[in-house]
Image (cartoon, rainbow, N blue to C red; front, side, top):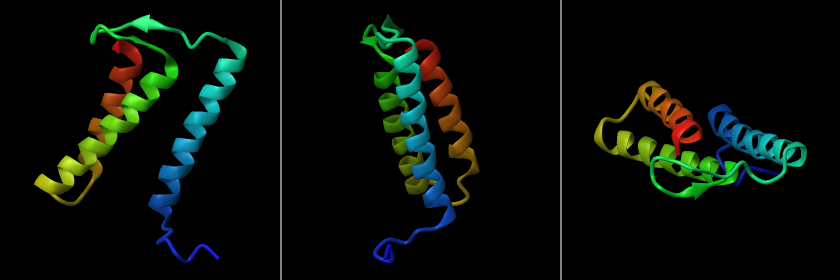
Length: 92
């Protein structure tokens, strides 16, 4: 049924993580409405959803740049991406 895509465990974990993050933000938004707007180091007023989007976008670029410049393995860009996500939700 889903043979059109190469579903591997790493691929499934990426999608599970992404949908879990969206679900968690939905629950937080229901409990604490308003999006927790704040002005960060970029000078932009962002909400939790904006920060999640910036985290996902930055993570994609980190992994693509790593694959283009270095190649495998991907443990280092994973660590960099986790740091990027923490920075986005903390300071952006």
